[in-house]
Amino acid sequence: MSHQGSSFGVGFSESSNSLKAGMLAAGIALSKAGLPKEKVQLCFLFCTSRHDPKDFFEGVKSHVGKDTLFFGGYANGTCSNDQFGYDGYQTVVGVWGNAEVSFDLFIQEGIAFQEYETGRGLGEQIQAKKYQSQPQMLLLFDAVNRLEGKFRMNYGTPFIKGMNETLKNWPKVIGARMLGDMRFKPTYQWFEKKMTQNAAMALLMTGNIQMDYQIMHGCQPVSAYHTVTSVKGASILELDHQPALDVVIDILGEDLKENPQEVKFFVTLGKNTGDKWAEYNPGNYINRMCVGVDTASRGLYMAEMDLEPGMEIQLMRRSFEMEYVGRRTRKLIDQVNASGRKIIFALYINCSGRAAAYSNQTDEDIRHIQAEINHEFPLLGIYEAGELAPIAGVLQVLDWTGVLCLFSELVKK
Image (tube, rainbow, N blue to C red; front, side, top):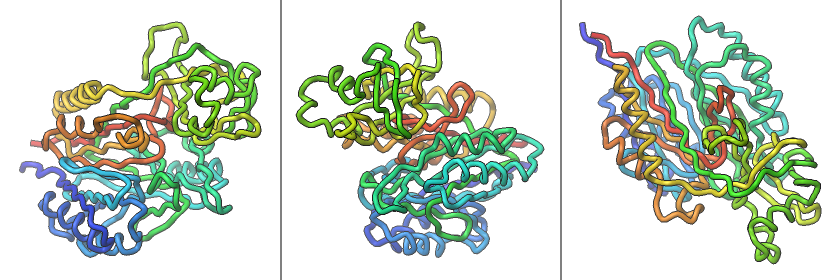
């Protein structure tokens, strides 16, 4: 008897009516998957913060069965095989059925100001499951902390450290830090049957499923090495014993002295995990974006808090070649196809800052991914606030990258 294989479909909508957007996107996804609603095992769902989260969720739920599990949340933008957009009313829904896969969902709420403890708790839950073989894991956590009224980032470095201390054997993992817009309004998430906020969530998959991923890097060094000499939390106060902001302005140009706030979301610092004197290899770099400037202390607020005194960093130029994105996409597709596996769908997690509107680009990298996939299999994409993927075998929160992941199955004769 032949194996039917997984059925997966993706639906996209830009309707400004949140209930209608959920219904439209879910209806398209269901139709493309060729599934009756009762057969949907798992539903991915994402929308921007312009939507009412409850109405959108109700719209999606109306098109799937009562046993469907939900996994998703806010995104700054979304895409499918032939549509994409950001900072508007974009939504995307993916439905998955006929899968010889077990889906286990885990959640740890209360990540704001408790990143390390949340990581420990989520790791403990996953560890207690005692998997016999390595699962595949998709990890999502809320980027936005508004508990004290003003915006503060939920940091991934202490979160991953907490998971490391309780999770003895890591699954194969990719993921994202979630946000719904570039103004960092509160973020909503959907988990199993409910809506929540301020949480970290993990989807673990076992059975006939494999994830293969490719990181799309987008930075190159433009300075010599500089040493971090003073930090406070996620703020770099000094580089080479000089105020960090002054060092950066000296490198980038005097015109920034008049408006130092332009450094925010523009400056990226890179940490080379490889040989510092070897030929440049983007796969060795962990890049950190500046998300704020403290003009009083002349310091830089960074997106993460893992740049410590004594570390050497370089100023990075943010740009990416579209041909590079296309080549890496095709290489990953060919690798999976050559292994004899059938690709079920692709997930693209893209840094919001890489979008053309925010990066002074004239083209969008997602167009090149869409072109290479060319409707061979469904594509579901989201724009977020930090990508999660291993660098040198260790899970990292990345900035200014895209992570393309292909989910595939072994087709049984």
